[in-house]
Amino acid sequence: MKSKLLPLLLIPLLIFVISCNNEHNYTMNKRYLLKNVWKINTYVDYEQNSTIEMRKFKYIFNNNGTLYKIYENNDTVNAIWQLDKDGTYLQIGRDTFRITELTNRVMSLRHGGVEMFFVSD
Image 1 (cartoon, rainbow, N blue to C red):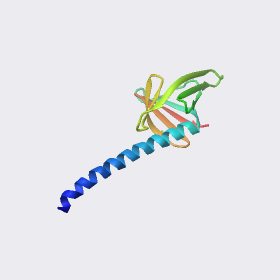
Image 2 (spheres, rainbow, N blue to C red):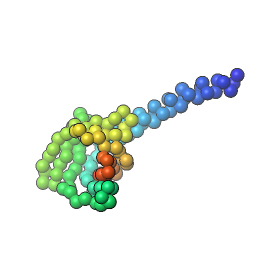
Image 3 (tube, rainbow, N blue to C red):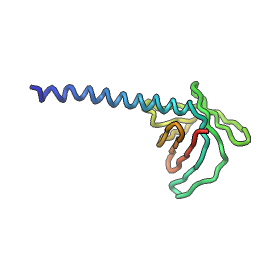
Protein backbone atom coordinates (compact mmCIF):
# COMPACT_ATOMS: atom_id res chain seq x y z
CA MET A 1 0.00 0.00 0.00
CA LYS A 2 2.77 2.45 0.91
CA SER A 3 4.58 1.82 -2.37
CA LYS A 4 1.46 2.89 -4.31
CA LEU A 5 1.06 6.09 -2.31
CA LEU A 6 4.64 7.23 -2.75
CA PRO A 7 4.35 8.05 -6.50
CA LEU A 8 1.06 9.83 -5.85
CA LEU A 9 2.75 12.06 -3.29
CA LEU A 10 5.92 12.65 -5.30
CA ILE A 11 4.23 13.83 -8.51
CA PRO A 12 2.55 16.92 -6.97
CA LEU A 13 5.75 17.70 -5.05
CA LEU A 14 7.80 17.52 -8.25
CA ILE A 15 5.36 19.81 -10.10
CA PHE A 16 5.51 22.30 -7.23
CA VAL A 17 9.33 22.33 -7.17
CA ILE A 18 9.57 22.84 -10.96
CA SER A 19 7.05 25.69 -10.93
CA CYS A 20 8.86 27.41 -8.05
CA ASN A 21 12.16 27.16 -9.92
CA ASN A 22 10.66 28.81 -13.03
CA GLU A 23 9.17 31.59 -10.92
CA HIS A 24 12.53 32.07 -9.21
CA ASN A 25 14.32 32.34 -12.59
CA TYR A 26 11.77 34.88 -13.82
CA THR A 27 11.99 36.98 -10.65
CA MET A 28 15.79 36.94 -10.47
CA ASN A 29 16.29 37.63 -14.18
CA LYS A 30 13.84 40.51 -14.13
CA ARG A 31 15.58 41.94 -11.08
CA TYR A 32 19.00 41.73 -12.75
CA LEU A 33 17.70 43.32 -15.97
CA LEU A 34 16.16 46.26 -14.12
CA LYS A 35 18.96 46.77 -11.63
CA ASN A 36 21.79 47.46 -14.07
CA VAL A 37 22.71 49.53 -17.07
CA TRP A 38 24.08 46.96 -19.52
CA LYS A 39 27.03 47.90 -21.74
CA ILE A 40 27.79 45.77 -24.82
CA ASN A 41 31.19 44.14 -24.46
CA THR A 42 31.46 41.54 -27.24
CA TYR A 43 29.38 40.47 -30.22
CA VAL A 44 30.15 36.94 -31.47
CA ASP A 45 28.98 35.33 -34.69
CA TYR A 46 29.37 31.57 -34.14
CA GLU A 47 28.44 30.74 -37.73
CA GLN A 48 31.37 32.84 -39.02
CA ASN A 49 33.51 31.93 -35.99
CA SER A 50 34.36 35.58 -35.44
CA THR A 51 33.95 38.56 -33.16
CA ILE A 52 32.18 41.44 -34.86
CA GLU A 53 33.03 45.10 -34.41
CA MET A 54 29.95 47.17 -33.88
CA ARG A 55 28.80 50.48 -32.48
CA LYS A 56 29.00 50.57 -28.69
CA PHE A 57 25.70 50.92 -26.88
CA LYS A 58 24.00 50.48 -23.52
CA TYR A 59 20.69 48.84 -22.63
CA ILE A 60 18.52 50.34 -19.90
CA PHE A 61 15.48 48.24 -18.99
CA ASN A 62 12.55 49.98 -17.32
CA ASN A 63 9.90 48.29 -15.20
CA ASN A 64 7.16 49.57 -17.51
CA GLY A 65 8.43 47.33 -20.35
CA THR A 66 10.40 50.02 -22.18
CA LEU A 67 14.00 49.46 -23.22
CA TYR A 68 16.36 52.31 -24.06
CA LYS A 69 19.28 51.51 -26.33
CA ILE A 70 21.75 54.38 -26.02
CA TYR A 71 24.71 54.70 -28.38
CA GLU A 72 28.04 56.40 -27.58
CA ASN A 73 26.94 59.62 -29.30
CA ASN A 74 23.72 59.59 -27.18
CA ASP A 75 21.45 58.52 -30.06
CA THR A 76 18.63 56.67 -28.35
CA VAL A 77 16.29 53.99 -29.65
CA ASN A 78 13.26 52.80 -27.66
CA ALA A 79 11.77 49.32 -27.80
CA ILE A 80 9.39 47.15 -25.83
CA TRP A 81 10.83 44.26 -23.84
CA GLN A 82 9.26 41.26 -22.10
CA LEU A 83 10.51 38.15 -20.33
CA ASP A 84 8.78 34.84 -20.98
CA LYS A 85 7.10 33.19 -17.99
CA ASP A 86 10.16 31.04 -17.26
CA GLY A 87 12.60 33.94 -17.46
CA THR A 88 14.72 32.15 -20.07
CA TYR A 89 13.78 34.15 -23.18
CA LEU A 90 13.79 37.89 -23.62
CA GLN A 91 11.75 39.55 -26.33
CA ILE A 92 13.03 42.93 -27.51
CA GLY A 93 10.80 44.43 -30.16
CA ARG A 94 10.14 41.61 -32.63
CA ASP A 95 13.31 39.66 -31.80
CA THR A 96 13.50 36.93 -29.17
CA PHE A 97 16.78 36.18 -27.42
CA ARG A 98 17.68 33.21 -25.26
CA ILE A 99 19.28 34.34 -22.01
CA THR A 100 22.41 32.21 -21.75
CA GLU A 101 23.83 34.05 -18.73
CA LEU A 102 22.41 36.68 -16.43
CA THR A 103 24.02 37.66 -13.15
CA ASN A 104 24.54 40.87 -11.28
CA ARG A 105 27.55 41.69 -13.49
CA VAL A 106 27.20 39.77 -16.79
CA MET A 107 24.44 39.27 -19.35
CA SER A 108 24.60 37.13 -22.47
CA LEU A 109 21.82 37.07 -25.08
CA ARG A 110 21.73 34.65 -28.01
CA HIS A 111 19.73 34.97 -31.22
CA GLY A 112 20.40 32.20 -33.73
CA GLY A 113 24.13 31.94 -34.31
CA VAL A 114 24.90 35.34 -32.78
CA GLU A 115 25.55 36.09 -29.11
CA MET A 116 25.93 39.46 -27.40
CA PHE A 117 27.85 39.74 -24.15
CA PHE A 118 27.17 42.66 -21.79
CA VAL A 119 28.71 43.86 -18.57
CA SER A 120 27.01 46.01 -15.95
CA ASP A 121 28.05 49.62 -16.20
